[in-house]
Length: 72
Image 1 (cartoon, helix red, strand yellow):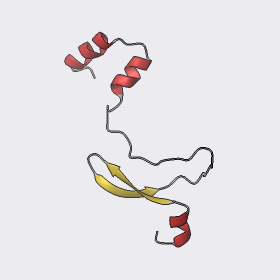
Image 2: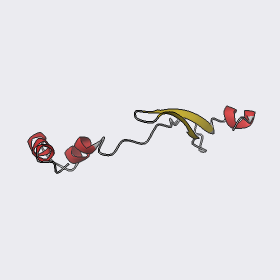
Image 3: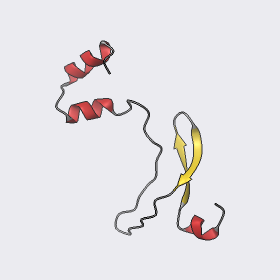
């Protein structure tokens, strides 16, 4: 992991996770100059549920009701 070529190609990167803290993971092997990539930590369980439900057509009141009854 300390190989200079791996470091130069950003194949080993350090990311911040909200629960676990900082950890080392593999970088993206595909390098595109016009579309740089950023490696980030995986989302927490349910972290994006509101956004997903909105994209599926649920209204704010429906989402709030589902949350208050413990369904999501």
